Image 1 (cartoon, each protein chain N blue to C red):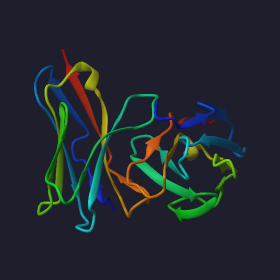
Image 2 (image 1 turned 90 degrees about the horizontal axis):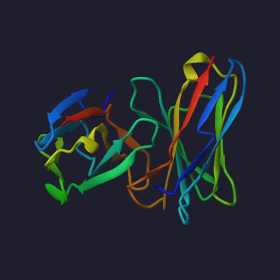
Image 3 (image 1 turned 180 degrees about the vertical axis):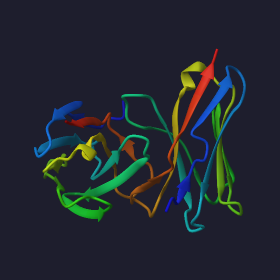
Image 4 (image 1 turned 60 degrees about the horizontal axis):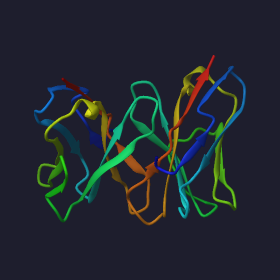
Length: 112
Length: 112
């Protein structure tokens, strides 16, 4: 158990809909990272937050947004969903000044 | 453009033998590397890492070797066990505390 929690574990929705994925980092970690793993793809970095502020952005679509709250949990919002958004979404955390990231169990999103 | 490459999508090894997983990178500025292990329906789990000031790091049955001149690293598992069957990803941070850049992964199958 990495100490990173993600909810929900599974999500099935329809095209055009909006969903919110939630992540709670390890106790004491200030940095949260979001990654997407599509079928037959490696993990692709989406966005990083550090202590409530956006720190880095990857290839995140404009339809996607994230935020980190004062209690340090983070939410990833995916809107106007398309079939191609079906993927595993992972959250990771660390102190923000270290290389190793600790991953949650992921949310499997299926868009029908 | 793949900055971190794992050219073998799969590897099958007999229990008790050595498993060797390979990873190549393109940017000589990368100076820290990590290996993660991932079981189906779980998030990646940190396994072992190596800094570019070393050429070898060992942790129990797992050893990572780094060849900076060849921009190549490898993970050795000795002896391999059926529980080692998983997908292994190599990764490198683009800077300290920054996003991880992942290879595509190698699926290891250890047969009894």
